[in-house]
Structures are given as C-alpha cells and as structure tokens.
Length: 78
Image (cartoon, rainbow, N blue to C red; front, side, top):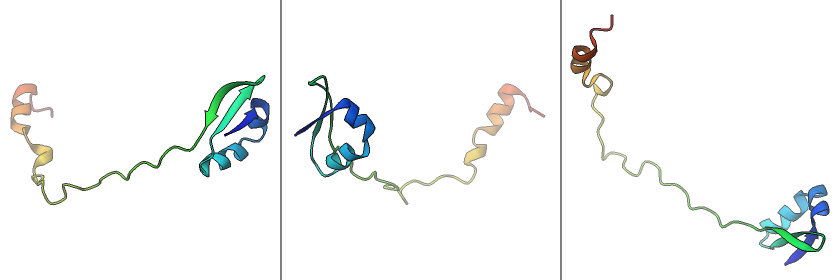
C-alpha cells in the first residue's frame, strides 16, 4: 500500500487512479497522517433487463382504463 501526500494527489489525480484501477490501494496523507484511501471497487453485476418479457400482457386500452369512472367523478373535462 502506497502513501502519497494530499498535495501530490491533487496535482496528479490521474496517477493514483491508475494504481487503484490496477488493484493497488493508495493512502492519501496530510502532514504524515492518513486522511483517505483510494482503491478499486468490485465490478457491479449487470442488471437484469426484460426478465419478465412475454410474461406480462398490457391491455390495448391501458391508457383509457377507468375512464368512465374518472369522468363520472370529475366531470367530462371538456
């Protein structure tokens, strides 16, 4: 684990990131005392998309469902 001064880290931000991406942890210190750590995060698993494709049917009149009840409650609106 490398220790780097905060001023150097600010001036050369991309260098510590490259090390962290390679798996090396990096401690950022100010006046010799650790104040932060830069390290790679584990990759997140891909999100499941369309896992219910073909399982759910949306009716053709979905956008008009309950229209009569709404008109009765709130008037015709026109």
